[in-house]
Amino acid sequence: MHYVGQGQGHAAGVCEAVRQSIVKCCVQDHQNDPVAMAAWLENKSPENASVWVRSADSVALVAVRENTIVGFALAVFDELALCYVVHEALHQGIGKALLLAIESQVRSRGIEALRLESTRTAEAFYARNGYFASGPVQVWAGMEGLPMAKALMADPAEKRTTWP
Image 1 (cartoon, helix red, strand yellow):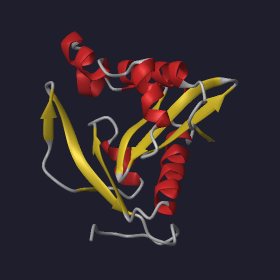
Image 2 (image 1 turned 90 degrees about the horizontal axis):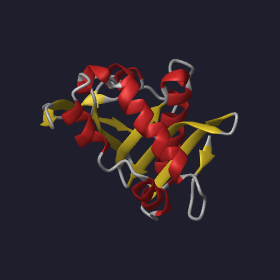
Image 3 (image 1 turned 45 degrees about the vertical axis):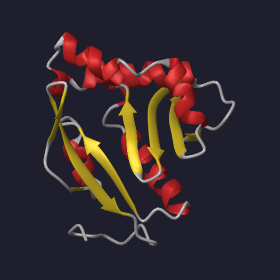
Image 4 (image 1 turned 135 degrees about the vertical axis):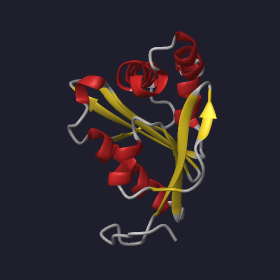
């Protein structure tokens, strides 16, 4: 995992990885509906990615394989805003490694819980990694998102079976 900070020129690669993941991996959510995909991809630009990784309020991490970004995760304050892995790198531990690294980084900033809005595609992944439903399903652009959260304990080896 590589921390992406200010002045590091990863914006185009981050944007490409996120966009590729949405198009190829999240079909369960967008159903290949061009209107839904366009709405989801609208803010996934190199310019926005550059802003995301430079913000002092965010933690941005990339997973790189053979000089190509294959995954990206972004937390802003106590929210996991993005966590995507390209199709060719799925089910190889990259998403979990990104998630654990983000959790560690935000925990070091004093954040006690991390929240997110999961796609249907990613819901089982987050549940396997200790996240629990924390609110009713939200609908945006015809797609469902489930609010989820996880307490970040001082000792990550501790396992919680219920949300506080």
